[in-house]
Amino acid sequence: MKREPEIRIALTVLLAAMVGLTGCATTANNPKDPFEGFNRAMFAVNEGIDAVVKPVAKGYDAAAPLPVKVVIGNFFGNLWDLWTAANNLLQGKGQDAVSDVGRVLVNSTLGIGGAFDVASDMGLSKHSEDFGQTLGRWGVGDGPYFYWPVIGPRTTRDTAGWLVDNFYDPVRRVDNIPLRNSLAGIRLIDTRASLLPSDKVVDEAAFDRYNYIRDAYLQHRRNMIFDGNPPRERFDD
Image (tube, rainbow, N blue to C red):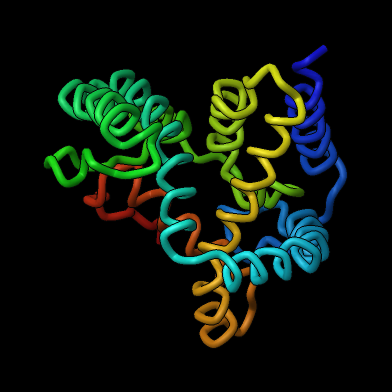
């Protein structure tokens, strides 16, 4: 029964996919976004959710001293490094995987449970890999773009990758339910607070927030999958 939250999230995503693929209208302005009508509706839902989350994140950002925010970010980053190592290994990047494991060992011990990023000072660079990137590394195409409730923008490939990431998320695998929920809540607020500076950029630069966020996401993911050196895209006449 302790896996029920993950199961409910996965079912919500899959159900939304069925609705999006079978019943929604599309404006077809972008070939990568054939279900734009559905996605814009979900974007509006998320904007409503963010109206509650964003003020909490602002309060946290204003009240928490910078060292506290750094420690919290380091702690959750250290947990993710182990999954990053697994994905680097799956992608055939053995040297990066070894480095990631080294980061976890160093930061979990000398860094006091990941609170301090001692590994970076020792020359062990931080990477960020997920299962969507692993799928992309092995040639799985993007598929249509979706904007999901709660989890936000994802390609079809990255949606499948997110389900795997979520299953292996170390926070969601904590047996103590109150502790697990507390960690998930702190991580959500800390992550949202870290995105506050980008809100101003989007608000000032975007004529259409939905289009701006979609295009930025697709470009960012392509850049990550190819480790910062994506091949030039080919366009049909």
